[in-house]
Amino acid sequence: MKPILKFSLLLCLLLIVISLFLFYKVDLSNDYAISKRSIRLFSMLIVGCSVAYSSILFQTITNNRILTPSIMGYEAIFILFQTLIVFIYGDRAFQVINQQENFVYAVILMLGFSLLIYFLMFGKDKKSMYYLLLTGMVFGTLFMTMSQFLHVLIDPNEFSMVQNFMFVSFAKMNTKLLSIAAITMLAAITYISFNLRYLDVIALGKDHAINLGVDYNKMIKRFLICITLLVSVSTALVGPITFLGILVCNLTYELFKTRKHQFMLPICAVIAALCLVLGQFFVEQVIGFTTTVSIIINFIGGIYFMYLLWLTRKRIS
Image 1 (cartoon, rainbow, N blue to C red):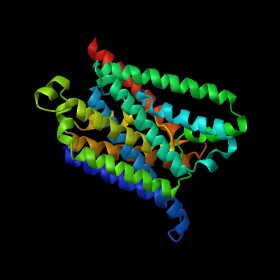
Image 2: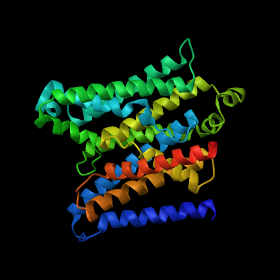
Image 3: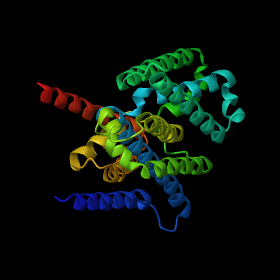
Image 4: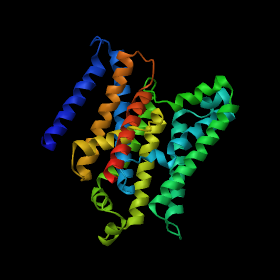
């Protein structure tokens, strides 16, 4: 089947699922229900695009198709930040710091962490990409351990406030926060779109990119900033979705045999949006909110991740 036909079918499927999500068991005259679903839908599209673009970008930079930005500890530092706020202020936490301020602080914190990792990697003693990943994993583990320690100390009644950030939920969305997230996402995607030619070259490897005239260190720093912005948008908006990036990126690679980023990025965004909308529809209409969409996606993504590891091992042997 031709790629354009596959993409058209994906778009049609996405539109069908969106229509089902918006209008299933809802009277067309019920503006309140449709508007609430529209807000959730808009948030899913933002998160889907953010996860897709950041994951493809990260896999291109690291030249590894089973890695996502979560390995860098971004989600761990976000959870630690939310835990610290609740630990310090208690049940007044989100009266002292509103959702908009929380989002801005989380973005600044993740950007600072990303720049720290960058300077550790590309400072005077230049390290390899593996050093970047190892450093991210160590920091991520450290932040997660610190969060777990604070969870033990926090009052059980206040711990539920932290739990709201640990599991993805599209049920309660702040429209002001949604607009800030959309603007941040569009800014990052716009920059990426104007620099797709560099991504295609970087995908060939560091040595080839440098030989072909790419300022490798400068572009890696800028793309890391874009990844951080996109990850912070999706994480601060709904919480961490660990395996969504692995799932949608590898589905893109399997369904479409192209390596041109001008095609891969929008295709991956459509697949991510499809997974989220379909998952949320299942949660709301089939199982009646008995679980969250992140648990379903992480379960399916985890199984797919194990399949990828088995496939990789089989190819090596």
